[in-house]
Length: 128
Image (cartoon, rainbow, N blue to C red; front, side, top):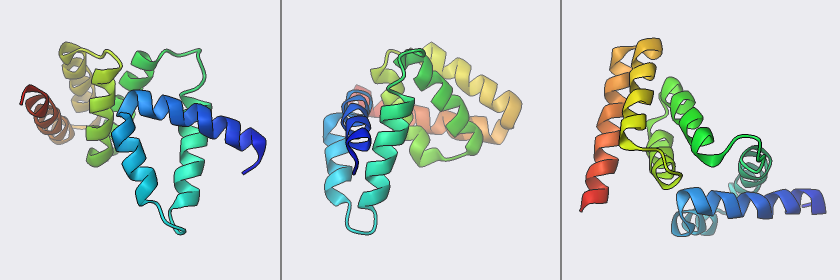
């Protein structure tokens, strides 16, 4: 890794942990092997260091954007992870509901229902 990449990686690592939780991030990095480690490092540097590290858009707004985009793509495992991260970044339950409404309008009711199922699972787990 070049020093530029290392700087972005460290910045990204800090942002990734603050949004998704240190335990989750450390578990993912520890599980990386020779095959997946380069992707984990690049994704941490690029997505979290370069993308999330840009202070022009605050973390709450970025989380809301991510929920919309990931929901539109129908990537529900990632949507669940980012739903938890959005809550950490201050996105309210009412805001999550409004985001799901937009997903349903533009991506279809079945996709909105999937997002509601996952969001309910996330909120139920937080109440335990």
